[in-house]
Image (cartoon, rainbow over all chains, first blue to last red; front, side, top):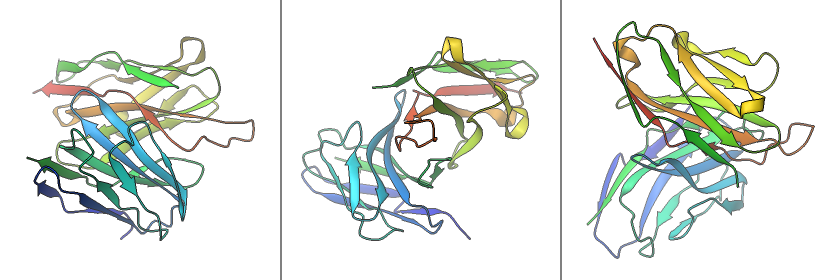
Length: 112
Length: 119
């Protein structure tokens, strides 16, 4: 059963702690993406990667970091430097030509 | 940088009413265009896409969209909505870098439009 998995579905952290969100895909897609979804603001791109061991900043990369050591995995770390980390985080993947993006179920992060 | 604007934040309709959701983008070159839908509690999924050819594209569940290049628009339409169409709808744009169709590698999404359909 092909697709994108994100874990966990809900995540709670205390302010000042780093937290890593998992994203795995078995679609054999080259490109992977992380978005943040806030009410009324749509999806905003955090980071994306078109190939293993390479990634680029999106529109709102400050306070986030990523790695792409394997084609199927693209974890996102929300660091303590991110001023407003509470949000719904979506991972996506696509072929290199961005035919269409396939999305995971998302992780809702709450930081208090 | 390109931007995508969706005209309405929240649209409320009764069943059988016609729907049109506006989407405008700012990018002077060639683009690929998408509409995604997020039903309550479900993954974001593709409704339809436009790459080239006939500017009127048909998607799943009776949705269609028309690309008007001169207006930089890609509006979504459905002649008769159902209660099950209640969802959030997102327009997205992918700029194309060259004539060979190589993309810049990322989508820019609009703010989203929440559609509520009353039975």
